[in-house]
Length: 399
Image (cartoon, rainbow, N blue to C red; front, side, top):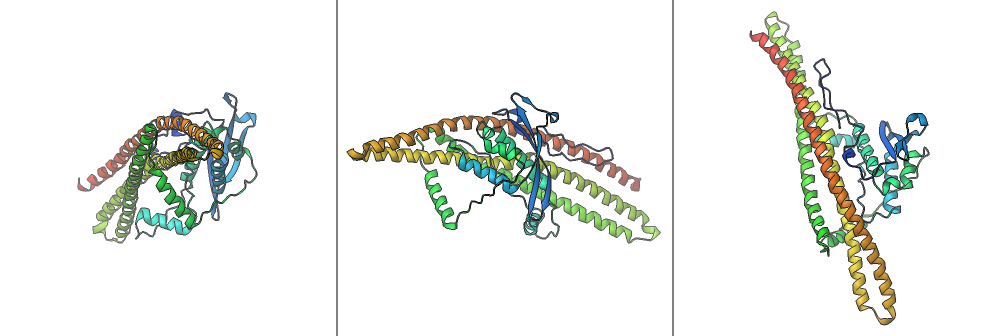
């Protein structure tokens, strides 16, 4: 669990540091062979390099660094894309909820400017600094989800990614506009297909409703955070204006007024600091969880969609068998048996995945809310202490 923000003893408010432990530690489907930390993001042009610190498990125990099995591997986002693509293309993912790959980090000035205007307002000329620590946290969670999965965690591709120091091959998957349109139309048609199993039909319905709700919750939460950022910016501008205005009053008669302006500017700075810490904590706790859950729900729907495709193939094979001519019955039976086995295997795997997913989702959401609430309470207490000090200072002018 992440630590709550605390005061540094000098009146400043310390934010919650992104924790290296996963919130899913309450429940792990598999004792992972690897412990991973993603650190030291370094920007090199349009590429961000990350250092992976990997510690490997030997049987039932985790080897310590003295046993020389702690490695440092350098990876880029393109390497993570290669890893994700390898799982999708070389692993039988039927029935599996594939952990979602985090979005690409923002490195281009135009993208950074667009993000800043979205968060701070179109009139803002401030560009938000690089926030690669967020990418480190997202990529670290992604690797921990893979390492803790019963299938992906034992795949040699993951071990290669975490242990080999040489550069990995690049893979680009490009689709034309017509391919994307065709896939979307085909997907929309198959998504509306009625399932023969009430359990999976209910899961489909629940996933669609939950996806819309979690997306709305994430977007609304982000809007609240952006409003806090804009308010903090307004505090900063007003405090600067008060300091400048106060410095222009050099008359003795206005000296007291100058001190009052400075005191007000300091109070605004304290309020801004509290908002900044609030924004950091909100994004690192509940905001991070909502975004992850939103993307994970998309992976859940992709898994259910894949099973629906197998169901359609199975129903088509049954119809083909019933209409097959005598000389083609054997081939039709073989085809039906093949798709039936694939469908049943997918359904069995999907049931286990859904059970694990729902159980872990409850634990993770509970912990995210707990950390969020603790951070809110501590930050509010520290901000109150700073503003109370400013109020005491103001009372000296009227006393």
